[in-house]
Structures are given as C-alpha cells and as structure tokens.
Length: 513
Image (cartoon, rainbow, N blue to C red; front, side, top):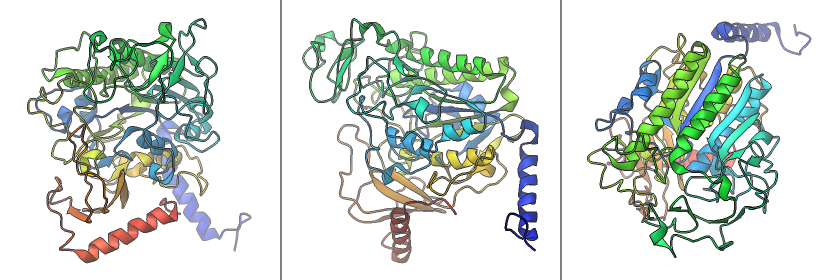
C-alpha cells in the first residue's frame, strides 16, 4: 500500500525513524540546532599550535578549545590557497571545477553568484542571523566597480545579514574596511581609485621609494604604500578610510563580539575570518616581541588572543552551552610570503607544518591538512578524531543539522559529516580531492598525486609544491611525511585511483545522491 505521498508504508516508517533520530539529536536545541561560530584563520599550519604539538610557542586559548572539544588530525581545507578554499567552503563545490576561482586581485568582482545556495543562505533560511567579519577575498561588486558607491553584489547578496570585512588581503589594495555595501569612513572629497594594471594618482610606491617603508618586501609587494608598507596593486584616495595594520585584529575582534552581543537572544551564525597570520605580519604593540619567534610568532599569539575574546564573550553572554564553535585555517603555512619580517631566520626550530611535508601552495599534505577544533559543551565529548573531513562539507553538514533540503545541483561536492563533527562516529568522508594546482586523491590511507609539469619548488617561498611528471602514491598511515613514493611498486592501485580521480573530475559532482 502506498501513502498519499506515493511511498510505501515501509518507506514511511524508515523516514519516521530517521526523523526521530534527528529530533533526538537536537532536542535540546530545537529543530534548527545550535548557534554556530566558525573562526577561520589565515595561513596557519598544522604544527603552529601547542595543541598540535608545537613546543616553541604556546596558544592557551586554542589549547582550551581543544581540551574542551574535539581535535581533528585529518581535517582539510579545500585548497592549498585562500580564495579557492573560501569559495569551496561557502558553496560546497570544489573550486577547481570553476574558472575564475584562483587567488583574486583586490578589485575582483564577486565570484559567487547571488541566489546560489550557500552556507549562510542555508542557515538564514533556517532562521539564523548570519554575519561575516574579517577577510573576504571572494570579490565584490561587478567588473569596473566604483569603490565610492554601493559595493554590490557582495556578502549580503549570498546569504549574510551583516558584513564587516577587508575586501581581499592585507597585502593587497584597497586597504579599507567595508561594512555591508559601503567603505567605512570614506570621505567623498577624496575618492578611491584602485588598479592592478597600472598606477593611479600620485601615491608613492615601495619600488620607487623604499626609504618610506617600515617593512620592506622580499618579493613583489612593492606598489602603493599604506601605513609604511607597500602592497600588491595601486590605490589612490580614501586616506581617512585606510586601515592601520597594528589595529586590525582588534578591529575585527570587536566587530565579531558586537555581532554576538546583538544576536545573543536568537540563533546566529558568525563566520569570523581573521587576517592573522597572513602577511604583512604587523602585531599590535601588546603582542610585538612576545613570542620570541619574530612577527610570525607574535601574530600567532594575537590570533590566539582573538579566539580567547570570542570564547569569553560566549561565556559572558550565557550562550556557550548552545554554541558550536569551529576553528580551522584556510590552507597550510608559509614563512617568507613577500615581506622581510625574518620569519625564516627567527623560526628557531619551530616547525609550522609539524610532521607534514610542504606548506601553502603545495600538493603535499601540509598544503591542506590544517588545525581543526570543534567544541559544543555538553554535546561533544572531548578527544581526538581521525575522521577524514573537509571544509567543503560544511554546507551539507549544516543543512542536515538545520533540516534544510538541498537540491541535486546544490553543494555538488559537500558531504554530510555531522556525526563525525559531533564525535558520534569515527568515520568521515570516504575520499577527498586535494587541490594545489595539481590534484590529489585520498582514499583510506592512500594518497595519489597526479603527474604534473610544474616547478618542484615555489621560487619565492622555497616550499615544495609536490609537482612531478610521474605519478606519486603514498601510504599516509605509514608515511605521513610523504617520503616514500610507492607508485612504481603498486601500478594497479595507481591506475585505479587515477581512473577514480578522472571520474570525479568529469562527473561534475561527488556528493552522494
């Protein structure tokens, strides 16, 4: 017998049981689940935190988060660089599937189509107040946008209710904050011009006037000078609106805290994307010199301080017990990424990648395997998880958590990992495509890196990129540092994994039906 909905009674029974299980999971928080705070660090490595084994630097607030929650040791960003990681996280689609999702210029147009299903749009549909604070780097407006008017489309057109952000990165112009659709503090008598092709106005550049610099570039980064630091790209005007690098972490943290305070009486989703520890690394005076590892170590301490303020705010507002906090990073670490801040010289034995090979930009594990901490007091049992998870999975996972349906075309590469995220299952996704220019496939302990003709090292950062004209195969359970290429010994496995990777690429999706 079929019901009025065209399904059998047995099928209806299974659906009811599934609904009962989901209801029991979130009974304490109502149908839509907990608040969500996603703290997204920049360029932070797997070995940069003391809770991940660092011994030359201490990160007490992040250690506290790890001690009170679940620490994942096989969690990944969706790419080894920033823009594609952020694109994949918010859309549930691997960025390598789409043209125009590489590292963006500071004046790039928005690369996520308004109206598309995104992580914030799903949660907003479920009744959450949604906010983004910090680094954006997904483009704003349309080609040729006027920075002195309304900057749309932007975060508000893809699911966020509120936005306070930097348009791109700290080392790229325009060096201003944007709140919702407008540059903050802009003087209309001093209009902003931005170009990544040619100089605009008469602003001095680092290349022409190195004597004006307080922090010198090591490669590139020698165009318009703002706050004594030369950047990528040219900018003129907007002098009253320009940021002060030393105050940036505090500015973003205050805005994040304000969002939490304003929405403490309803469900909220805060995406707090810190600038730390990206270059230029210019810590506030209270952190400068504290780490003993130079500016890079100091901004790790500054990042830890920002996390502590968010955690303390949740406690102060009485919402910590009903808030799921996730902390992770957009890609792996890099030391010299464009400025002479002595990061290499002053590392003093600190290993930003921990036991992993490579770093930012790399196909090796340190490119995408990143710190990943999850806390929900009273719900998530503290411990360590070896589940394979990826930030591209947030969309499907929080859609399931908030009971929001996804169309087949939505989030094509996002997998529901809710049970792993909550520590209720040791299993996460069954495979992962890692992206760093070239692609890699991870299945169980095995990692296959497809052949590529690119350089073996990034000439500026000295990071191993993982490129090789021959296939690479590693057993990560026995060789986490990817030192023994087993491709020649296991040609059948290489063939099978190469075939599977080609299929994932050609299918246009990998989310289970």
